[in-house]
Length: 161
Image (cartoon, rainbow, N blue to C red; front, side):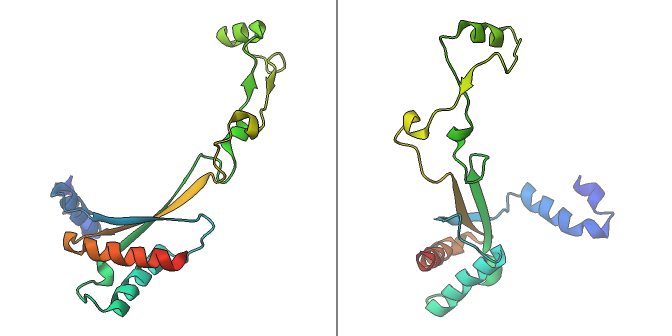
């Protein structure tokens, strides 16, 4: 694949990325922090700039550059955004033999199957109140800078809360 990419100047950046992957020269995971999903941010580049400015203002180490910090945000949900997934689950009475045979024989007619919902308090008292979470993850191309980024991302996290 790399052989064919050398004929196209416009794909030079792609070729460099593939070379780095082949040599396992990839970004190192530095740190992650959990933030509220309601927290609004301008961009991942802005978070990286905040981490960098925190490092500059701290003055402990000047070797960290803005290009050393790569931020990725990820939101995890149950597939329903902020909705409780239990509210979407339909329950069936196991004592209704007719329904069991219909399901087994794939002769499903929704009007014949008697489904019902259960209040979340009846399901469990241990259900969470939030159904999504957002992570801020920091990466760096230089493994030596991982401890610095960890410290400053932690400081930024404290400022956000």
